[in-house]
Each structure stands twice: as structure tokens, then as C-alpha cells.
Length: 210
Image (tube, rainbow, N blue to C red; front, top):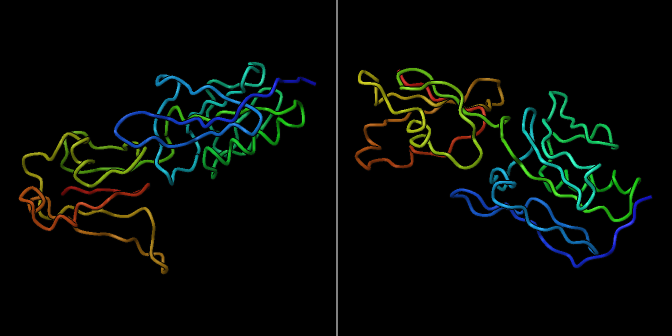
């Protein structure tokens, strides 16, 4: 049984990129975890972010390298494998919920474990752009992203693209199973008109540029 000296409580935050800092791990009472450096923190995550398959995480134990996993990939079954703890369900949980679950599992083999969960790479949340853009394909969705922002990431529209009839097909469906779609007039947006068309994308959305 490993024992640890108590420390004062602290909160660990990720600070990276243009997004606001998002708390992702909190030390239990009686312990303290030093905040990771910018490089160690990986990426900032949106408040509604939940872990999914193929995401890359860092799960660290304060002063317990034998239990730590500096880089672990969430398997297709939603599990991660940790030293001494074996498989732990990760998909469908927020980083904080996973921290709590790992802490509970680790409490069976050590006293007062201090766990830190950091997101190193988001591969489960994607949006797609196809058609007349410079760089079509899937794009990671680590945080809020609008239609125009995605088109910019995709290198912009090609010369003969139909700017007035871009179609966004949502990843979610209606109650009857039919897809939800919305037309976007890019030409209007570039003129500052009907800016509500530049809405925020959701995981699974596909932007089609004819």
C-alpha cells in the first residue's frame, strides 16, 4: 500500500489557444497537483466536450509514475488501459468525470490518489467539408467553429464554387430519421448580410460546397 503526505487543495486548468481556460482536473481534498506546463497540457477543450474514441489523453498520478499514462488513446470500445488499473471506461465522460472514475479505481490500490486528466489530441469530434474548396476533408472540432471558419480552414472556395447555395447537413437527424440541412449564402456573409447564417457547427456536420 503506497502512502502520501497530505497537501493543500488546488485546481488544475488547461490554458491554450484562443479559448478560455477550461478546468479539467481537480485534486481531491488533502492533496495538491501542480499545474502542467503549456506544452504538457495539450489542447483546450470546450465546456461541453466529452471524450470519444481515438482521442488522445494524458492521465497522470501525482508522484506515482507507475500508475501514470502520459499518452493513452481511447479505444473503439471506449476504454483506456492504465498501468495496474487495467481497463477504464473513458468515452462518453468529460475529463473531470474520467478523473473521478480513475481516482475511485486507484483508491483500491493506494491512499489518497491525486489524478490529473489532460486532453492531448481530439480525434473524435470532427466536421466535414466537401466540394469546391481548396482542401476538402474532415477537420477536428476542438471548440466552437462557425461555417465561415471551417471554410477558411479548408483553404476557401474555388473559383467556380456556387457561393449562394452552400448546404450544411447536420450530424443529427429529425425524429423521422430524415437529415437536417440548412442552406448558407456565402456571398451574403461576405457582404455582412444575414449573419445568422454563419452559425456554429456541431460534431458530425458536413458542409457541401457545389
